[in-house]
Structures are given as structure tokens and as C-alpha cells.
Image (cartoon, rainbow, N blue to C red):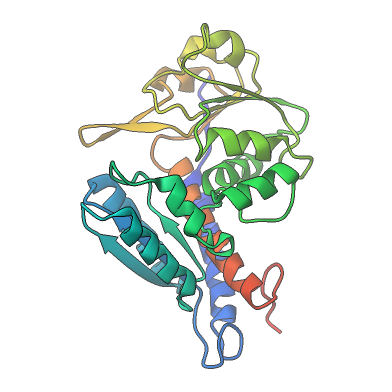
Length: 299
């Protein structure tokens, strides 16, 4: 058996093409402003971390691809908590910015959670503000966490059913594991799964993963999911990666492709979906700011 590919890049490209149409509609005079303006994404990056800088640059390129505006605030190492929170307050007040992110991780000495509390929940592009996570717990409408939402969209696109199936999430982090467990368990289309969350501190991970219809590996532990831990024919999503020099290393060992029915690639799987959902959240924030619900119509 050779696993079929959960192609995140192809789906992300289609989402971006659909968003470009919606962005053009929102940019018309009299929609977001009297003169007209496109939806805008803001980014705040502290320090000189190379992977973070490249990731932020990619987000601005994504904006350009769909006709969105983007605003970036780069801050040096040595930035204080007060200085960081002041910039976040400026983003809250900037009419060009419909939603924005504080790139994680922040340098040692800065409190990411405290900075997030300064952000307006309505401008939360990542869907990770405590208010929005609380709404997710309650099943209320709010910006959804980008990677978990992207993973569910990727599975749905390829016909991988979650309703009533067993989803095992390996990893309990704030950006993927915990919010994915909440989102996937909701009684809604593309979800309604029976969810188990485990982590690398659990003895005999395979005793859990071998019972799964779908595995999401999000531990940031290279090769933690091996072929003997996967039930033949199940779907495996490689959401966790680490860097070994300049090489991207997946949480899922290469030989899993010979056992799984579906597998997301190390590059071109979850990553493009995360970035696409960031654009979706920003465009939806722009629409909500002027009382437009759902996709913008041509009328």
C-alpha cells in the first residue's frame, strides 16, 4: 500500500483564488471605506529569528497574491513588554488592519500570553486569543485557529470522514493540539469525531494510535509516528515539524507512507493550509467589521 497524498498546496491555491474574488468585492468604494480599500493583514515580529522572518514574509506574499494589503511592524531584540504592547495597541487602532498576528515565539523575557490579551479579539487573525478560544469551547462563532481549521478542511477535501470516527492527536500545544481537539469534537460538518489527545510523555503511544481512523501528529518530535504505530489504511496528518539545520523534519517517519491510506506531505501539506486560513480569517474580520456575514456577493 502507498498512501494517497493529502495535498494542502492544491487546496490552499483554490482557497486563495476564491478569496481573491471576495477581496476585490470588499475593496470597492463604499464597502470597507468610502474611498475603497482592500482587507489588510498585520504582522508583528520581535527579534531576528530566521524561520519566523521567512514565515512572516510568506504571509505578506500571500496577501499580495490575493490583492490584500499588509502592514508589518518589526521590532528589535531588546524590545520591552511595554513597547510590544504599545505596538499591538497601535495595530488595534489601525484602520488599514482588519486582523493581525503576533508571531510566535517571542524572545525570552517577553510574555506572549500577556501581549495577546492586549489584542482586540475582533482582530485576531490566528484565532488564538483567549476570548476566541473560549468561544470555541462554547461552540460560538469566532475566528478559528488556523492550523486546526486547515487540517479539518484538508481532510474534508479528500473525503476523509471524521464524524463518529476516532481521531488521535499526538501533541497538546496551544496552536494545534488543544484547539484541534475542541474543533474536531464539535457537532458540525467536517467534525463530530471521537477525540483522544496524547503526548510524547505517554507510555506506548502506539497502543493509542493503532486504534485511530485518523492520526494528527503535532508534537514537534521528529519521526515520533512510525509505521508500526499506524493502522493500515488510516489517514495520517503530519502537522508537527522541526528544523535540522536547513532541513524540515516531520513528526511522521517516511515509512508510514507504506501503511497509511492517506498522508500529508512534509512540505505542501499542513503549512499552506495554515497560511490560507490566516487569509480567510482576515477577510472574514473585514467583512464582519462592516456587518457583512458570509461570502461577499456581487450585488
